[in-house]
Length: 107
Image 1 (cartoon, helix red, strand yellow):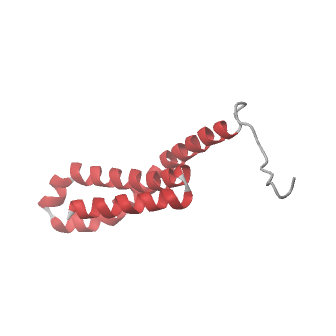
Image 2 (cartoon, rainbow, N blue to C red):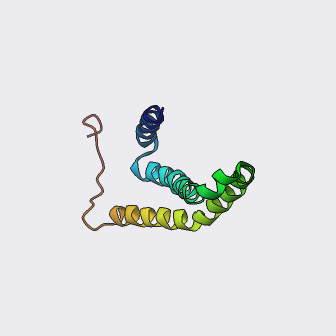
Image 3 (tube, rainbow, N blue to C red):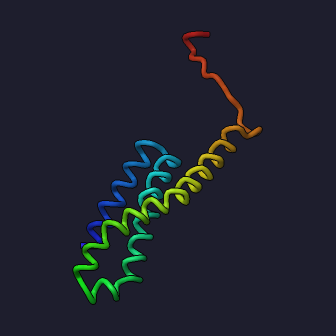
Protein backbone atom coordinates (compact mmCIF):
# COMPACT_ATOMS: atom_id res chain seq x y z
CA UNK A 1 0.00 0.00 0.00
CA UNK A 2 2.90 2.34 0.75
CA UNK A 3 4.33 1.79 -2.73
CA UNK A 4 0.94 2.57 -4.24
CA UNK A 5 0.75 5.87 -2.35
CA UNK A 6 4.33 6.74 -3.35
CA UNK A 7 3.56 5.85 -6.97
CA UNK A 8 0.46 8.07 -7.04
CA UNK A 9 2.43 10.86 -5.31
CA UNK A 10 5.24 10.58 -7.86
CA UNK A 11 2.86 10.70 -10.82
CA UNK A 12 1.04 13.66 -9.28
CA UNK A 13 4.34 15.46 -8.69
CA UNK A 14 5.46 14.92 -12.29
CA UNK A 15 2.12 16.19 -13.57
CA UNK A 16 2.28 19.24 -11.27
CA UNK A 17 5.85 20.04 -12.42
CA UNK A 18 4.70 19.81 -16.04
CA UNK A 19 1.69 22.01 -15.31
CA UNK A 20 3.23 24.91 -13.34
CA UNK A 21 7.02 24.58 -13.68
CA UNK A 22 9.85 23.52 -11.40
CA UNK A 23 9.91 26.45 -8.99
CA UNK A 24 6.18 26.60 -8.25
CA UNK A 25 5.90 22.82 -8.01
CA UNK A 26 8.85 22.63 -5.64
CA UNK A 27 7.34 25.32 -3.42
CA UNK A 28 3.98 23.50 -3.34
CA UNK A 29 5.53 20.10 -2.67
CA UNK A 30 7.71 21.47 0.15
CA UNK A 31 4.78 23.31 1.72
CA UNK A 32 3.02 19.94 1.97
CA UNK A 33 5.99 17.73 2.91
CA UNK A 34 7.58 19.81 5.67
CA UNK A 35 4.53 19.96 7.99
CA UNK A 36 3.65 16.33 7.19
CA UNK A 37 7.13 15.09 8.09
CA UNK A 38 7.16 17.13 11.30
CA UNK A 39 3.74 15.76 12.31
CA UNK A 40 4.87 12.18 11.61
CA UNK A 41 8.10 12.68 13.58
CA UNK A 42 6.19 14.06 16.56
CA UNK A 43 3.78 11.13 16.49
CA UNK A 44 6.66 8.65 16.33
CA UNK A 45 8.43 10.32 19.26
CA UNK A 46 5.24 10.63 21.29
CA UNK A 47 4.13 7.11 20.34
CA UNK A 48 4.77 5.69 23.79
CA UNK A 49 2.19 8.03 25.32
CA UNK A 50 -0.27 7.51 22.48
CA UNK A 51 -0.10 3.72 22.63
CA UNK A 52 -0.45 3.59 26.40
CA UNK A 53 -3.76 5.42 26.29
CA UNK A 54 -5.52 5.43 22.89
CA UNK A 55 -8.06 8.06 24.00
CA UNK A 56 -5.28 10.57 24.67
CA UNK A 57 -3.73 9.74 21.30
CA UNK A 58 -6.97 10.25 19.40
CA UNK A 59 -7.76 13.51 21.21
CA UNK A 60 -4.24 14.87 20.70
CA UNK A 61 -3.92 14.20 16.95
CA UNK A 62 -5.82 17.21 15.62
CA UNK A 63 -4.53 19.89 18.01
CA UNK A 64 -0.91 18.80 17.65
CA UNK A 65 -1.25 18.60 13.86
CA UNK A 66 -2.74 22.10 13.81
CA UNK A 67 -0.02 23.57 16.04
CA UNK A 68 2.78 21.89 14.10
CA UNK A 69 1.28 23.08 10.82
CA UNK A 70 1.05 26.66 12.10
CA UNK A 71 4.51 26.43 13.65
CA UNK A 72 6.12 25.21 10.44
CA UNK A 73 4.69 28.08 8.34
CA UNK A 74 7.68 30.41 8.96
CA UNK A 75 10.09 27.65 7.87
CA UNK A 76 8.07 26.96 4.72
CA UNK A 77 7.77 30.70 4.02
CA UNK A 78 11.55 31.13 4.37
CA UNK A 79 12.27 28.24 2.01
CA UNK A 80 9.77 29.58 -0.54
CA UNK A 81 11.39 33.04 -0.36
CA UNK A 82 14.82 31.48 -0.90
CA UNK A 83 13.52 29.63 -3.98
CA UNK A 84 12.01 32.88 -5.30
CA UNK A 85 15.28 34.76 -4.73
CA UNK A 86 17.27 32.09 -6.58
CA UNK A 87 14.79 32.18 -9.47
CA UNK A 88 14.92 35.99 -9.63
CA UNK A 89 18.73 36.00 -9.55
CA UNK A 90 18.74 33.81 -12.64
CA UNK A 91 16.22 35.98 -14.46
CA UNK A 92 18.10 39.20 -13.66
CA UNK A 93 21.49 37.72 -14.57
CA UNK A 94 23.81 39.70 -16.86
CA UNK A 95 24.40 36.60 -19.01
CA UNK A 96 20.77 36.40 -20.12
CA UNK A 97 19.99 38.04 -23.47
CA UNK A 98 16.46 39.02 -24.46
CA UNK A 99 15.70 38.35 -28.09
CA UNK A 100 12.69 38.86 -30.30
CA UNK A 101 11.66 36.32 -32.85
CA UNK A 102 10.66 37.69 -36.24
CA UNK A 103 9.00 35.35 -38.67
CA UNK A 104 10.02 35.21 -42.32
CA UNK A 105 6.63 36.55 -43.37
CA UNK A 106 7.06 39.79 -41.43
CA UNK A 107 10.49 40.63 -42.83
